[in-house]
Image (cartoon, one colour):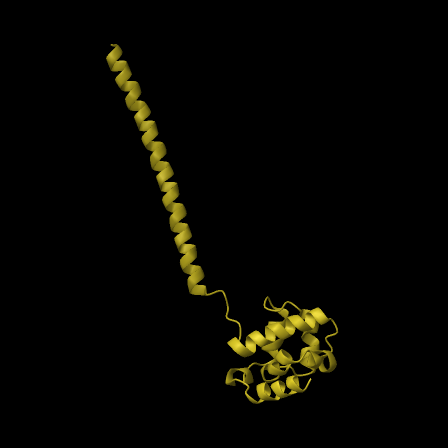
Amino acid sequence: MFRSIVSLKVISNLVPPFLCYISLFFANRWLSGPHVELPQYAEQFRRHGVNGSRLPQVAVSTGYLAKVVGVTNAIHRSKITLKAMDVVLFGPPKSDSSPLKDLILTSLLLAAITGLLYAYRQNRKSQLHLQKVCKVSIKKTCL
């Protein structure tokens, strides 16, 4: 118990600068989005003002979540604590999507499909041409 209080004070005093700029909006989006997936607690986080500067408390103390915020499910408290520790240690989650990357991948996919269709069409044309040539050569040899 004493050790967790000491570590809570140490971590609370050493809040990384980027955590100070995490707003309530981000905290609610983080809680509701694909990173935590517990939107039922977003209103409680907003009501109690849990933002970036409070995430270290959330990260080290499940008691804070249970007593102050009101998260009653132990599994949910553990999940929120683990995800909050990730944010405290490694920063806010990065977006997996980039419009430029999506555009490049889409254009490459279209180019590949176009190339395959062209190759299929050329193959079909060459087969038909070969059949015509074979028919003509067979008729000439028979006469």
